Length: 133
Image (cartoon, rainbow, N blue to C red; front, side, top):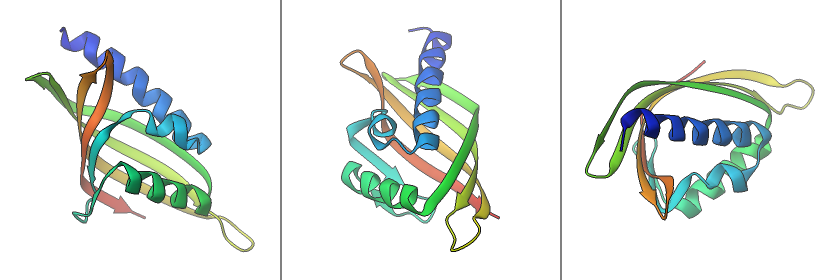
């Protein structure tokens, strides 16, 4: 399959997932992940799908507002797996007693995607860098 066509399809999924993340819609956000997903945080903690749902819902509860953007650093397609390294920047307003606290989170993440039953799904994510300020 043509790499440009794959990236266009995956960009559409990223946009849908980012919007769901900003709206705190766990169902739509999780639809990008395959049931066998393995998610490795920058601290090397590995989550399965169930734990990703739990951690994401917990994160949504403590945030007032989220804004996120990304760009692709590089990508490749080999053995039916599309691999991309992306840089993401999220602006998060955490709930406080009186005021919301602003935090910026910048990450570099490696996504592995596979076409499963006609749809691209994330099968593995590795956060290789995370900075918060």
